[in-house]
Length: 388
Image (cartoon, rainbow, N blue to C red; front, side, top):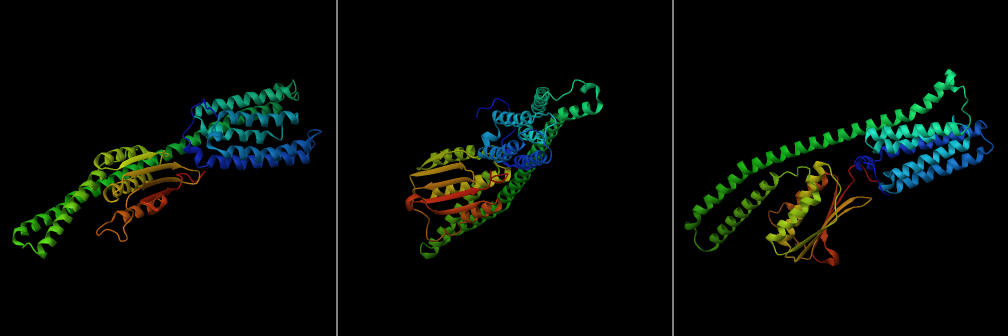
């Protein structure tokens, strides 16, 4: 469905708070309309109207639930409202049992559009309802002179505008709260990363460097037999530890700054592809993620890419990103030698990846790649606002 109106971010709809409100109110509106039709004779075809209402309610909710695009399509909203107006017309009275039912068609427009446009949608709704009131031919000519009748008509005309304005403002406040929470998480995460980077650089790295200098001073005094081999191995490990810490410090001091995870992964893949011999392909996209989730997701993927380039001995690495209905998935697969039977001595990368995944409530699976060749790292993230 094409959209010509500027909508709020789809994440507002994805969490389904507003769709849940639509479902509850529509079911209630349908039950109220059917009850009124059964208790009070409105037309000569009340049973048919009741049957249509009971049929249309689940059908309309099912159609709106099918895809995110349909829930956010003004054309669908308009058709839904016209169906409700059709029921009011069939009832033959503007004071219709279907009035509450019709008001439910305002929920998705009011919570998806900017509030000014949402208010305009409510005005159009009221104008159309006024036209329906005239077409039913049950609006007496002396309505403007009858206080009670005039108040009833004014209430029916103004309620849609009140509903759209209230819901639009509520949606705006929720979006601002969500944005503020995301910014707060980003600042806290950035401060913690900076603190860890300082500690690594000013404490751990300096101690490792000092140990390397002390062992290097002993190098001329150690004979070229067994002890010398152990010393050379220890020096090599210290050099590798220093290099790893420098990499960690550099990554910690490079914040995500709200950039999309898939964009950062493509940049990291390009850097690693230039430094190594493996071809790295990144396919697909990820939705916007909360700052904390985005940071851990990127670090897990970056660690998996780095491990594949350094240790897999592979010629190709494939990164697949997907936003599926049940989960957001990220897979890094290589055609290398596969996982070693025993973890590398001193290797903490896998434990760190599993710890990060647990922190954000994600599932991380590491095992053989496609066809049993190489290694595949698969991360499954829950949707930020719950599964669609």
